[in-house]
Length: 408
Image 1 (cartoon, one colour):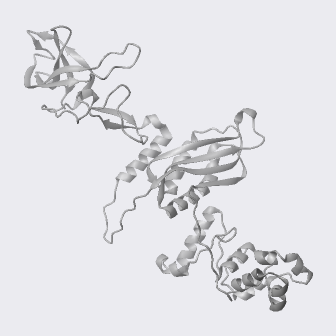
Image 2 (cartoon, rainbow, N blue to C red):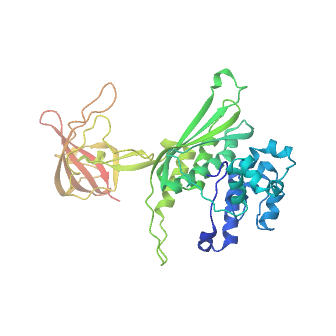
Image 3 (cartoon, helix red, strand yellow):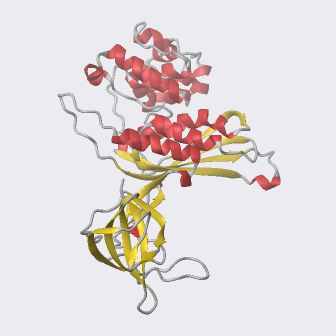
């Protein structure tokens, strides 16, 4: 870090990016997105001085010619003595350099001469490496007051670029980030000082484009309580990124990541409850072997409230499972102890006994036990085809037949 600037030595890396011109164009495009200014020069202090003066290219003319014309404020070590130097007639760096070095060394501190020599390339430079913070938090003052939530996206995009660079440097991916906005001082009393939204991703991400899409969906459904003057972005949750190895041979394109990103965008647009995923349960009862849960990533998979997890895997059914399962089993009439469904049923395979659910009760004030004792059969109907039916024990010694599923 060099005062308010970041210094990068790029000469050694030019070949990796296809030459200096390609690297220069890429860096200037990135600086434009961040709203920063980039300057090129043979030395670090020269680049800083030229940037302060609004010059972009330190290679257009000889370095000494460019620096001699700059004002005293271009270098911090010289600007500290600007008042004294002005009294002896110095207005530019060239005027200071023209003074006798012996007199400069006796009258001023040694940092002045050192900075001049380093800027002009007469003395080597040494800087400390940039140290990244352990936690990313960046704030931006907007150019004007914003009154609609989608209008925050332009400023937030700059902060997302900074967060992505921090994530890449730390080899991390964000699984959650928070955008916080601060209301103008002339806000209504009930608006509060700030608001925020937190956006989560299913896997660690570094993509600015994906972050911006998700944020755009959320902001489109957000209403600001008061005009906004400042915004802040925080990387709330991060995790290490597993980098894929690069192969010299063409690899098959993976579609899994694209589907996951598309589902996240749909969820951001429609809401958390509108995107669900099937989850397998360790349960012997067929209707409880699978359930649908929100697609939002969960820290761990646990059994639903009131249901104890089974100690072993789901029961391996001896019979083939049906293609379609009825939401509520249909009780079948009987004739001479034989179940009827669009004709007299013919038993093909069975029985396959299922018992369990003693821990499970239905919800509500009139909760009922959901334990089952069933004998499943594969039956053939003259008109409905192959059916999945079971016989259940009722109160006392009574039994009843139920239709539970169909085969496609």
